[in-house]
Amino acid sequence: MATFAVCVSLCGSVCLSGCAARNGYGVGDAAANQSAEAQALAQKDKPDSAAVYLALIEQMQQKDMYFASLAHLDQYERQYGASPKTTLMRADALRATHQMAASAEAYQALFGTPYAPQGYRGLGLIAGERGDFARAAQYLAQAADTNPTDAQTLSDLAYARMRAGDVAAARVPIMKAVELDPKSPKVMGNLALFLLANGDARNANGLMTAQSMSRDVRDAVNKDAQAVAAAAHRQNRSTQ
Image (tube, rainbow, N blue to C red; front, top):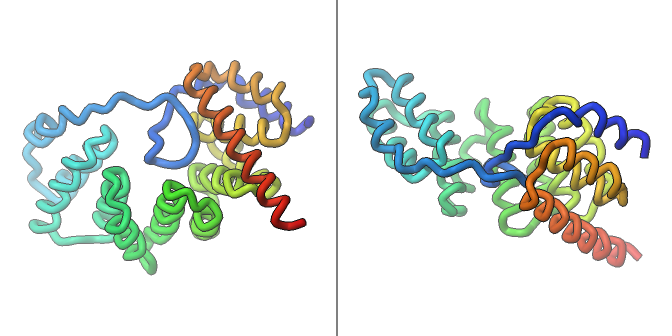
């Protein structure tokens, strides 16, 4: 497993601080939800232009204020009209608030726009949340094809393929993701999962230690590894 050892060495100095699960696949310590700040943000600087208002809504989403962002997207589109950008923001907020059918419809509306890769990625994440990782991998592969240097999409694709039982097919996208964004907690969590899925527990544990992963994160990685092993076993039986 020389390749895996190199990955651990390259990425060992990066600290795993966490990720929001709704933003993609993988594990990490969840950031604190600051939804109580929504009203304060809205009052802080009265938006006097479309650009300022949109930036305000983006701040809400960055702070996990997705319900508030939906309300402000309604107001924004009444004032300035809808655009592919606001459609993407709405799709993300609908997915984060578990309104999956409406979210999928919004992601599909992005096809044929500059945000088509994000549309495919969003549909892949929805499929994964429903437990359909084979379909998720298909959507995420389309997203990666149309946006081949996005590390988060590549990491999501690797995760979906592993959860679908195709560990070998996860190798290229996860290695691309690691080299493109070695400081991403989500990418490093999925690399640890990939190492475990390949039976390389020593390097996986070494990576998790080097990244200062919390006990909760380690437990989540190990739980995912069990799910990957079960999926791989089912796939092997189906092909025999």
